[in-house]
Length: 89
Image (cartoon, rainbow, N blue to C red):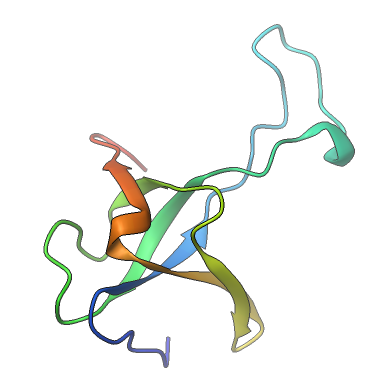
């Protein structure tokens, strides 16, 4: 990726929502909630808590969406990241 975030910014790739509900019902696109889980692709020099490759939970309204090299990514501040998922993908 040709993107280096500045300061305390983090670049995330959104993790896709589940295709089935807990009861096994297949969900159409219109019923899926926007996921708030992402994989860290790049971090700025002032980021302390997360690193590239981490699976994280982020604030629903924090990130800004955009495309880089035809790929949809999210850019957010480190403070918008709520938790690191241990044992993640």
